Figure 1 (tube, rainbow, N blue to C red):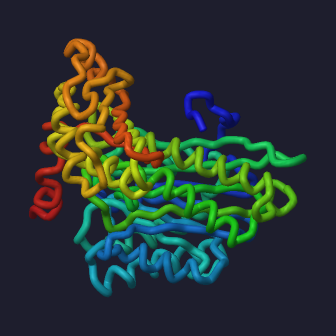
Figure 2: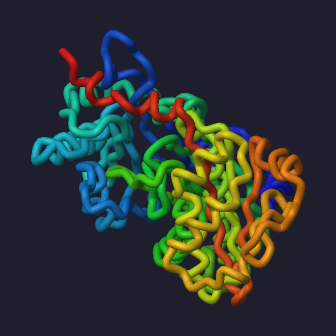
Length: 414
């Protein structure tokens, strides 16, 4: 589905655009009490929900991820609390206690059980959570819940992001119109298999749990699992989708046209979030779509796309607006995919650079102009099958290195 055509009506209201969802954000001074900023957010459904979620594939999982995985088993989620400034990762038993304390405090403020609360954190790894600052701020956070604070909560979850990421759409579904909304954060440590990112999705559609899980899993696989900025997969990555049924539509039936329509809309909004994350990558200057076609198998196409997307040499050439197809070719070669060198064609934004594995003779000025754009596509045709795969990625800049080379040392300095 084309993103440029905008097949859905975009509506105001952000994450609280769907019926029955409220939100709020406050400053708790999590990272630095002397420099207050919005860093604690809350999303709440006034009606019972069905909830689906996916989490990081990293074997080192932050405390809030482990708590969320446990709470999700209750099948009765009503709220999400999220902080920025501290990941609460690699913090041992205390980290689990602090994540649970966030759920307890939120539950008390909203009249919920702790297991009805999903807990999320993002920020620096390895530092103890200043939990008292959070629990002290929760009552005011809950008291201020409304549909008016959607811009604030999109800002509160930001870390190294330069801009908030938010979108809400309307989707005709039979005789009713449902709404789906999302906010996301992520700018660094982004890699397929869930990069360092959070995404929260709300919808007022009525849908069963099994169907919501299926739609969510497929949408994540086709969107957030196809982005890469720096090849790192983090410890806190989470996508949560809450559906409260307040649109009044007939419950979406498995396998029917309304099911397909809902899944397509959910995937659309996640893809928009995924693209926003890559476009706002830490000090990136290029948004690049890697489109592999003609592969022998789906996995071969995926291997090639992800290998090229994560090649540091390739990324550096893009940063310099250098159409270095040789670097793309060498990455294809070590991707472990089935290939035949003499069959490979490579295109930069539609201009062929490599034909049958050798230089195609396109004027260098044409190729340079293609990769000098803020956004462009690299198409790789292996010409040995029908399988395809697409990844969204970025360049790698000197500014990225400067930005990331001293975060922890700065934070723990006396």
